[in-house]
Image (cartoon, rainbow, N blue to C red):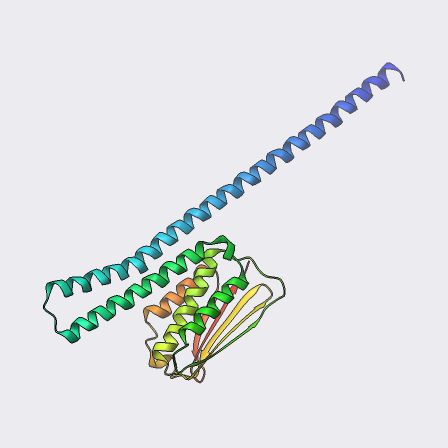
Length: 243
């Protein structure tokens, strides 16, 4: 190998090594950039969830506590008749129970170990049967799910649960129904939920009430869609992507 060939070999070797080093440095840079971006997105997500929790605590629990304070002031400042006193104490007990449920829901939504579709459905099922346990309404609960469980975050779980809770509570309080049914299935990574009853229908309740507004708001927040129609009672349909 003459001197010219050696020089060419050295130059080619230098270029190859330089290209490899540049490639490795570029890969490391892109990897670090992606990790930083993921951490940033994670931090943004955490901050958004904190803000949502604070808002929920303020709107729901704060409002309930304020209601208890106002009723307590009425009891302390006025000489109420026994019947009115009983009514106020009953209201305080009911509101306190509601606050307890709200806190449990917030704690459950923050537990990362519960971030699965199966856990959400079991939580809904347990709540639903407890809610109708001593009512005249017969509840049917059916599911059609893929074998593999799906990861879902706490915000998604909480919104879906609160929508179902609102719908079931409306059935219990306003529908005059004797039967209610919950159907939950997954098709093409879409969570589909149907809640129906054989009651008096949506036209006989307040279609513009805060309950329905809250249902729409929470489903929109998780990129889903909801429809509420009359179908020999009330039929609520929810579809929302799992991913």
